[in-house]
Image (cartoon, rainbow, N blue to C red; front, side, top):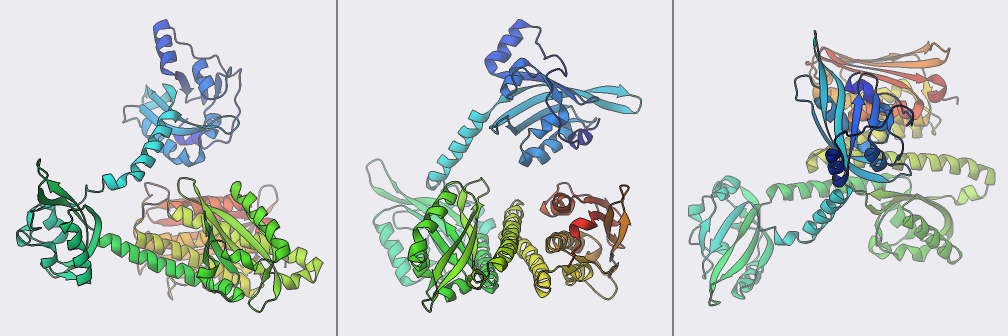
Length: 604
């Protein structure tokens, strides 16, 4: 059994009678393992059977259970660690390697307790006529949760005291008691294109700068005259070849043993790229505000200390400036009879970090109280900390006049808004998983948001009855289409709103990859998207959709699976019980998608 074959099986079940526990024959070694808090394991790769020592069974939370299967063991690995574990196992099974296996992963014990485990082992191989074949793994495991928690505490401590280590930067400098430069590290020239020799003997304010007022220099010189340290002194400088660069400086005064002031020493940093990234981030935030302001609902974002953002429709509804609503200022517009229950409900949901939903009366700018429905979804940082909520609020006054219509539209609204917010949250989070620069992150995020917006617009035009599959695909490919590079063909089919949004996300990721690396990246490449109805072996009616790229550049399988590939492979499988086969071949990418017609076709 190969490593990938073992990992791709379905969930198994621990079995107490699957084999005897591993025992260490040497009592001295057994004592050493016990003292070190280690357990041992053996994996038979041919059968997929796993044996635990009694010590390891206790560590894993299954005392008395000494055997299981590799598939069942993998079900206990934290889902976020699966890709890394797969990679490490594949490397250990490589016949050309030394077979060593070392993994640190999160293990979910019965009851949901998550522990960090370190697995050390060695893969053993049979020498076959066709080469070496892995047949088992022997190793030991230790609980390293305390070490991981200590590392996390250390990181937090380092963050709190980062000002103490920020002097380690791009270049080093020194000044004498008259504040004239006396020394620079050689990195100054490579990082700023400024010869150090041109700066020696000069004072900082004697060098050409941009957008620095006399008042700023006067304040800085007064600080130096008081012999005080300074941090993050930022300004723009013109180097020797006429470029404008951003510089950040840190400095400490120097005193001799008698306490006499001798000058300054410190470090400098070229922060030009950071400033550009900040500008791009501001631009991205402006695009987000534009998108939010264009939404047909009241959108708000809260932090740990209250509300932080309101879109334009929200401000227009209450007739107030954003600053008047920040924090808890918005609560003044709640109806007096609804205020206490609303705030209590929100506080309870915030305490449990769960989704919030409520109906309440809210005062409009003209003084009328309108019935509103608000839905909020918690947002989290990459390390799992709750940052607050993102939500939307909709005027449902007219719906209140018809209880039957309220029930129908409220359910549709609930599903639609939650779906949009959930997808938006996942897109933002998963796009940030990749190590992208700010501009690349903003471009990738906006591309995915625009794809969602196109599908949303198509559904809106049909009053959310569904979307024609040919129009849905053509809309997603419009930016890349020419007269000859795209063919979209298939029988007329109206798909449900949920299917339309999911299919549009998959097609957008296929198109993005094709535009970057595949058939749409050249003038000769072609893409054909086709679909047909078929019958499965069980008689179930199926939709078979195929994406095919040809005549583009040679395509290679990427070394790692990014978020886009995950969307292609997993989204439709998860949401509609479909099947996806993605083949990345030198002649081009082919993606075959099979979906149950009953799950995706609209009946309207």
